[in-house]
Length: 110
Length: 111
Image (cartoon, rainbow over all chains, first blue to last red; front, side, top):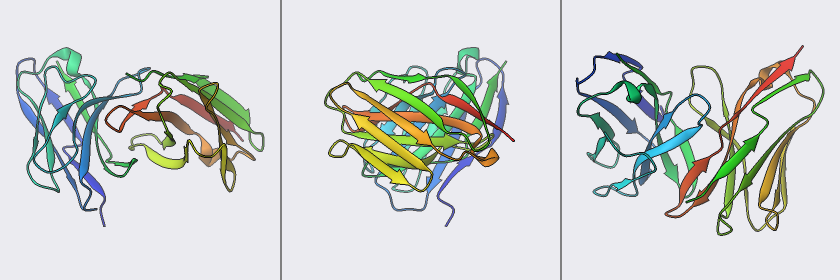
């Protein structure tokens, strides 16, 4: 039972490049989330999906898009990366209010 | 939306002493308050949570207290050990059942 799996673990992009962060959970949870973590700012919600087929904006959605591919998978896409998107990205899934996090993707945009 | 403030940002204690981390929240409708521990290079992990119908909850060396009138809640760790060293985050649920996190406390337990 792997829980929440994120790929890749590390990524370096040049400004303007695009990429997709992948997330999969094997706990049969309905809800999934994408957060970014920046020094001194805690975790901020980018997008969430309350169930398969639905997605909603969180606190900081600008510059990102998401896809809830099926119940297991929730991807985050940066269409044109900017240095301000340098951060650590965490995916989570939840049952009721309890959230389970992946190990994170450390992204640097040069 | 919800605003969660967390203090202190860093905390150093001697092994065996107690550590207390405090959080305040703004949305009086919030009714679920989890605490997460994040070790270096890992994702946050839930260590304890409390719902608004109770004032205190304990799990071995860890306890959380909630004061809904004052809108604050605290994490208490007793008999601290070096493996308790980590970053701790408080959070509160609000709105569409989403979590709002505090800015974190880096706890260092000195052997």
